[in-house]
Length: 395
Image (cartoon, rainbow, N blue to C red):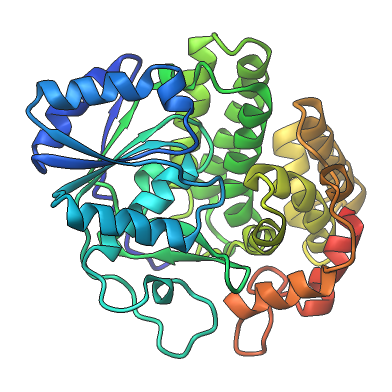
């Protein structure tokens, strides 16, 4: 292994920590652009509590509401324009992963010269990453993406119907104020989709990373087992604060770079799902739930030992040798059954997605990211035909 790891984001974690938002933000600015989504934070009182904390600390507020579940580049531009016009010097993201991702790119777009879509990888020859951004404070209201403590963001361009990712050092939030109490009102389906999302973050590195990373493997298995233990508790009783805390912490750890450190892992399942949700606007976690088991069966053909190990460590399935393909398939089947048991879709047809655009999804995926041979990076690398195969079996 050869790697460097640094995550500069400070965490303020625990029930009731929303009350500390004002004092946290005041360290970075005097006027905050507060970015929110479709309105749930206003309906449940979270927005009012956040603004009160900011105002009590002497921080003025400008608003950018209405961030979509799959945030659009036009929304990013709107937010950046508001920040400039209102002379905001700090950004607060109050919402789920889409709100946090949009807020990151808004914070950078304030200073970015040119079209902010060029931050995102989409096959362009002149991609230019952002180098500066307004300081960002994240306040997640959903346990799913881990965006509160990483440098990545996923944005959709409605004109090209492409969904892509940017990662840059300036996009790291300064502070993540993580209050699990804010997730108590999250509906069962969104809770379940978030659990799938956070698990997929670690299965991506677990199955696609380099060999010889046993510490990271154990980290990944711990996140998966924690999510599988406490996730159903959070779904069964949304008011179970202990379950909400454990799922929230698992979500954060799953994608703050700690589990992935040294694995040099691509994220092929995420890349494929991005192409689907760009076209169909489905929930990201739901798309992952339908695609990941199909991809696992595809990848297990070339790495049966890895998937057999997953089956043994996660589901205690006995192995008849390290490359027990039967055990590997049984582990994948049990994982798919777990997703179904918590209410996640395990086929694309459940989301009314058919095969009409299946080749387009593959081409869109490869336009965003591909290796020197034009394949989607992963273990194994995937051609357009491979992507189509996985998607057909996910139907």
